[in-house]
Length: 324
Image 1 (cartoon, rainbow, N blue to C red):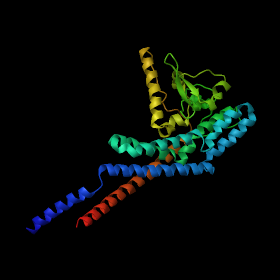
Image 2 (image 1 turned 30 degrees about the vertical axis):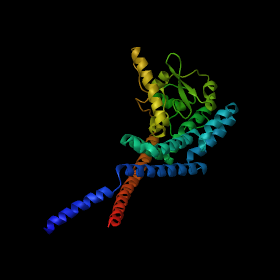
Image 3 (image 1 turned 120 degrees about the horizontal axis):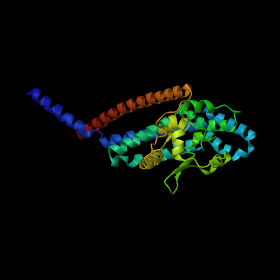
Image 4 (image 1 turned 60 degrees about the vertical axis):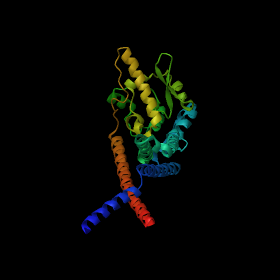
């Protein structure tokens, strides 16, 4: 009889514990709130490092910018725009801030959208934290640094990249003139569709001189996609530094171009079908930074998971005491 009574009491206790624990929605919201806090902290820390010149390529951007203005004073306005990436007012960092603001709003109501919306929100929060990793952010700055290097006419060396000639041979890519590293990067411009359904790259106003300065007409999406050269953004950073909206826009342009080619009986090759070759150090640095972020993120998740379990147990104990 005592054994039976003990079994019944254990079953009742288990049901009571389950009923007093946090709901799935509460756990989701708790995880998203923690993700927002982590993302804010990561972006704030990165901003502080940029301001205090602890990101090495911010210093190089300033140095290269000053050199190019001496060599080619007529490019001063464009150089100043490119050099802005050495500060927190630059487009790459400002895009991070914009993404953070958007996901903070999403996190407040994502639970109402169910598991898919929660998963998308958590993925974006993780992406922002990864993009704020100093090593990866430093590598993202190699593109504007190398644009300035190309503008110097060989006076300044490219960083973390093959020379223009070597890259062209290794990747069978075309010389799309200085600034080619920034084509297709939504921080600097956008694909503009004309009446016939073709898309051409248009730099934003502060970078517009890039096209006229080097005497090249509008670059079409299909020409660029088949012959684009190496850039850190396109070959390594795009998935991390794009917002969901930017990725959707790029996918739409690619899809429309592929459909048009298909209707004309032509073959179309995605600009991302083949990863362009560059120096091995880029690969190593990117891999190490990704591994470091994944390890740190996993540790936080384990700690948070343990904390949630403890919090659930604590709440249950208080509820039981309150019911006595």
